Length: 399
Ligand code: SF4
Image 1: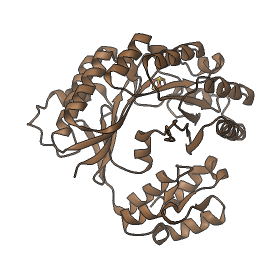
Image 2: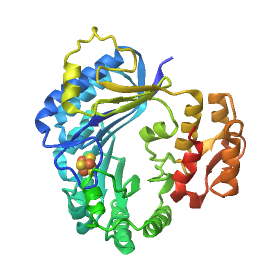
Image 3: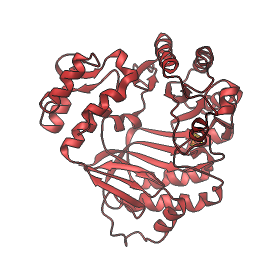
């Protein structure tokens, strides 16, 4: 049986490194893009040669995938298409920086086969965008969304960040109001986290920027949640909201749902992670090393077994207990669906209560978890007020 996987391609290039970013991405390395695209194609071919895989979703993430030319993206798509079976309603997403995409480029993306774009908007306010060192302004976002619609995209996602230094509740509210006027089908909303090793981390250590106020951030999240529900968006994950299509189907992100359902995915590219056949793995985070390792192997000469390629630098086997813990931690992120009882039992041969009796009992008493639904729809999920306290719940399930 061909097992459906989500496929992730990492594009580790950015025009400028934003002050808060700790992703695997590099500025000033664009001269390596052509060799990197060749290496990615090589990795796709090597991995696909070891097993027949059906692709359920494809996600080009970064970094800034929209820094690749449409020809480069088309060759990657050709390689994917030639090496994997695509399910009929496959979701193919690309993350784009609103400051880097012209109208004609968006048309080319649509022709290549992309059917979903996720734009990193972050804020509608110029002071926030300046602080984050983003290269776009909100007018550019409005124009880009218009161009994407003209190009034929019917599924757009916009990312926003809240809890920024000096960001007031009213400024955040204005960002949300302006953003939904663009009618995106999907919204991802994240609280700023200040990561060590980033410029934001250094500035916060030296007291040069105020640390995010957790109470204000909680108010922002709560307000966003109510505002978006009132405006036709359904929250389906801690940080994600989606509209319903006219046929009643939600514009939830199929690719990310694969992660939250703890189902298999393959990662290609620098720093990419994969999880399949009870194995988790990741690739080298260095572009030069990645290109070198892949350029030294010929298709057919590789001794690597599925799902590994020469770029892999880490692998671990996931035992059943860990898999069940991860199923709980990831599934509880799904605020509407939660973790369904019957599929859990069918997948693991044990009920959730068999394995996590004590943890579930404690969290029910603390009113952080609740049972909802009946029969096939019976599920355990976060209570409304636990959405902002997710980490306190998830760590209880760590084995
Ligand atoms: S554009 Fe995105 S990936 Fe690139 S540096 Fe900025 S936050 Fe990081």
